[in-house]
Length: 559
Image: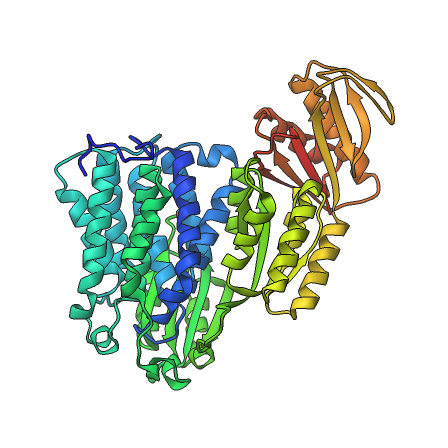
């Protein structure tokens, strides 16, 4: 496809701005989630631990979560948004694959610093810098892995004669897929297993997601995934999934941690050399601002951690034993647990996706019960918890649950009266608990979260505290009108209402206030609320997200 040929059924983007960077991150998470198990199933290098898809998904979720939590000013342009993604990926990186992706993002962010919107030449430069960083991330780079795929994509983007953004992205995605096909010829262990590199397959997913965002055609991503289905087919040989081959013959443990207060790059180089002496798959990479991620496969766990203590301050230490890697089981359900939330807002949906939740989009036209049923069964999870964020969706959720249970799934609906209650429930979700205990914990967390709203009255009416006129600002606490600010609904009236609602909710206690800004919320609202809490309730923490809801200017939760 040439730059002059618009994609059918979609709108071709000419530039990638901050909003589209966010959409790309969301698309990456959704696609990696859909293909996690397939990618895990072909993971045979550097060890057959069956976790590359999971590690990539965890890393990109951490990156997306960092982007959604970042203040608006910190992600105002495309370059800043990529930088936030890079730091989030570094902080949340899992495994070799996660570290490499974090460094690819860092290299791209370095080039795109100060860029308002990315054009074709900018993407070309970002891919080159990202590939360089990805290769440099590993102490001993190996061809036939994800770094080969990154490099091939960057080289193709460099050689693409057109400067059109889509053409550069399409050249990179096409080359990435071709490079993935070559990995068995570059790495004998892949050829022996009859698979392509798992990390490289994840890279192809990232580039396919970018192309789908640029073309405005989600079907383009699905088509690319279907075209690659044979590449991720599970090998017929079952030996890859025996208990011994799910670990490493040479090194039994994976050790990862974040490292702070490292003196300089020479100290990091010394740490890298020390870890090479302890094991393999070594990476010591930083974000350029004093934070480093350390990864090694070894047998001496204490030695790997002490090496970090010698040069800085380790935190978030994570140790995994390869022999503990799970073996795949034949079942109609491919995973044990899933959480499903129906959402009317793109921004709220993105926030949930970053937390690992499966979202069912409610657009106001289709039957929500049918859409929810399709989403529930599509999770392929044995146990599903549904958290309707709107009382109007509880009936649809109950209907979908009844039909799914009849088909053999265990589905429980936990009614929530507000999106902030959904966030509280999701925050305590722990798939390691028994399913029944997890449902109870989520239900208790939702019920314990007090809710508030700031709404502009659409028409005149009578409330519990008096009459209101159209355009007045109403403050709700737990569903009851608590105050009325006379209209018109300007910034001052909205600020007074928001602070008034929070004040009344905190009168009975609270340590955390969560605020979801509506689609029509002024930019100053979050700042005014933060200033108010700092002055009047300094002991209270405030977390602000873009909620994107249209039925309330502001939704509040107090825990």
